[in-house]
Image (spheres, rainbow, N blue to C red):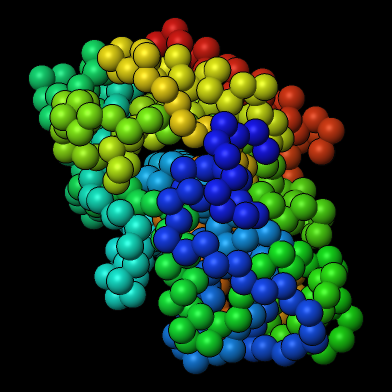
Length: 434
């Protein structure tokens, strides 16, 4: 993994998040045969959210992580609490019908609520801030945001407000935008510290988390699923597969329905707080309305975190900042000479439908993956729902599991070029403003 910083947290990529993590403790690797009510593969947001939900219900839980807690997208993302899904409610209604769309809409803000609730309940220090701004480059994008707002209101979702050109400066000081929309129930966090705090809370309930313990095989031939690692094995009543884009080749039935997609993030040197006050007066996180979008926010130590770019199949550019640094300077010309101190990339899991793929491989094996760019909130929601299902409350799980999921056309050989071609078309529309 390319990065511009010196490694400061063993086992993690060299990111600003890893350097400023509150907890750098390395958990032990699994080196024995153990039993549990539930075994979870993956110590990211989905897996840890499910583990905490189950532990609160009194179940014994073991989590197997191939690297470190939050090693994947959960500890590398932009740290933005963006509510909803990667497809709007009108699209969901056309695909799945009004009844299912309304049920999904009712859950769409729960992920952010779960984050805020756990931060308060377990005193998690993760720099939680409120408010998000969606920035429009064109009047077409502004109309689309207004349509989304009205659609949300038709599903009884509040907290969204349109912003005209005259008021943009209240949220972001840039000449690039013609308006936008704020979400008062959005916000931003230090994602690695969030998942580490949730992991600590789960461990207080007795959850055992093993790092550097990659699941090498899953045996479903017996009465109970058995997961084997290089050093041990876990036999459990239930198995939750939450590896997302970092699952590898373990379960082809899952991985054929998702594609790893990389995004790049960089963090500036420490800036003058007064400059940041001018650039982002409300301390909201910002993302633009382009198909291949940029996102940015202020950090707790007065830097600008700026992300964007996209690499289908998880491929990165040779220079991690070659795309996003010029965009940052277009947005904030005053940062033209600003030094970049950290730069990294990470993969998220994309589905063909852009809706998470949730389901069961057997009566005892559950999975959730493919949050498609909305993972901070959706993983928390779906982790909780996985926990509910295992505990016998499967109504909400069944809604998600009923949604159709499709393999990428062209299989593994052609899914990247075909998806990239579609992205090129939408990116061209963004550049032309049509």
